[in-house]
Length: 191
Image 1: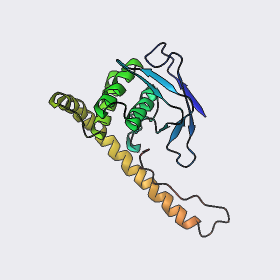
Image 2: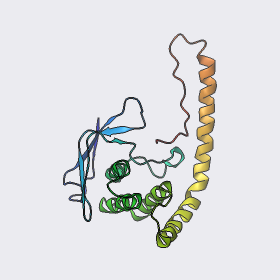
Image 3: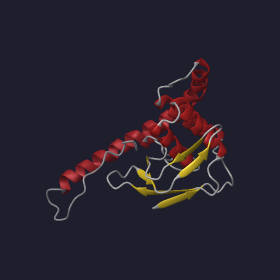
Image 4: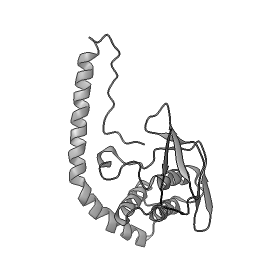
């Protein structure tokens, strides 16, 4: 079991709220909340229930060097998973609450806007008007230019590492007296 606390004082997340999770046995990329997590939005209150399945921030493996799956924004990521799974608001509002809650958790400006742009594209810019699409382009295009070269390099190395693991697995499996764990593809995202 793990727990995180923002340590930044009172926020619209319940005062003293700590994220308590346990690993989901059948899927090591997912965790389950053990305790509820409350958030006061602008007009509504949301309570993430105990038992919510989350992968924290759904960051593709080649990009975790820039945006780890958890950090100062962990509570926001869990809240966003809740809003997307239970749908108390539309996806555009869920994405906006995600960005706003990261601001309230003092996540730096560029990081939170890049993360917002990522969840907006994942939602296919649902309910987005021309203004929001323009803002998205203003954020996403420079971010893409910044991350494309390192992400491609990391992707190539992850694929190469996976190939090496598969080769060694194939060589060791027939001759080993101990169980040999099969490799996992290293570039798979958490979701």
